[in-house]
Length: 480
Length: 83
View (cartoon, each protein chain N blue to C red):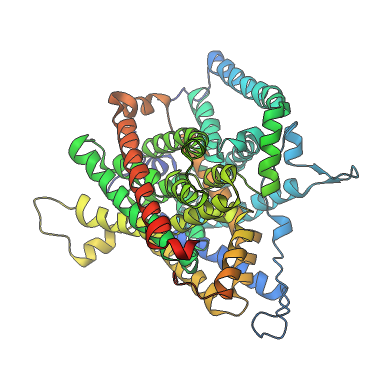
């Protein structure tokens, strides 16, 4: 049983499509539907923020007060320590209760129910069937978010993706996914919509935040490691699955779960491959975020070099910040910024992987190179939506006097929250359609583990060398 | 691959056991771990700096705002050779 994260118009039939009650040809592919839904959410957020904000006299952003009218109505379960109820109902020092996270989660449910039901109705005419199952999937996603929000769990970088997978896996491997839930299990549509929304957060103007040293560490080493690891997996380890090879390479070299999601969608990976890559990445991240700062302190490495090394090697963004902070404020600043620059690489890597896949991997070795129309037909269109959102928001950010306030207001107030829910829902769906038995073949032989370890070793060596060269030799005076 | 539409008693029992284990770990074990002095220090340390180690993307990190403000301020004050 195979689920591929790919365009509905391609040849293979996906599990999602098998599960969907419709047998007729969909009116629109998942890719274009995802682009449309994400675009609608971005436009609504933009208009809402634009109309609700005070733009002052328009000169150089002076007197600007940005307000996102949706912010109070959109959120996720908050951090809690003692009782999971605190995740939904917060209590201030005076003992007054606030229901922000609960109201915000309900707000997300309402907005996504309406949007996705209409989208599915338009796509294949089964909106109401979808809605019944979606309510259950949303409840499971809420449980996953609440599990991830426990403070000890958060402190060890155990992201919601892991718990969403776990919750779904428990259901599907015990009582089985109920038939009425299956029409709402639309993994690729949810992932792709989340990815297009993520595109708006990829602001190219932040690429130069650390100047050239940051670019060299994050944008030169990372592609080298990604490509080398992929080639190593194919030529040396001889991995059977190219897509698993690519997802692990991107996950390990770029920035963990978010890069794995983008790479998996771009190279049409199987859901089990994404699950495996994320599981390995989170496991190694927990180890690296503890061991690396201890090693850096033990060898007396400087904060800037240590921070750059952490930022370029630890997969998860939050874990980089946590590890950097244990070294000091300067290390935190450098580590988090290098990781941010690496985050921005997601768009380029997704585009590159998608192009490579449709032109090389999927090409018939006995036929001529595919022509432009064939490449266009195979190309995952959501990547275009992702890149377009990134370019558009980068232009807004840089060209308007109050661009940074506007973009931050849109992202922080609404689209970031929706994006997180889309990913969480998608991981619940992956869990709901995955059997533990299907995961087992991927673990045999230990090739994925060997690939990760070898790739990460190369990453550690190359990043350390580049960080030393850039921060301690070439740009030493500037850094000082 | 999956059980039939009406799940067996074993399957339901497994589901209950799984969620009971989750409930026990999350409602008893983890809150207890959070009270350990070393863990409390770590949680306070992260809170004070606005760091969420489980952040998936830089926009989810509270600490990025002051860092980016500081970088912008320093780059506007001087004309660094790096840019």
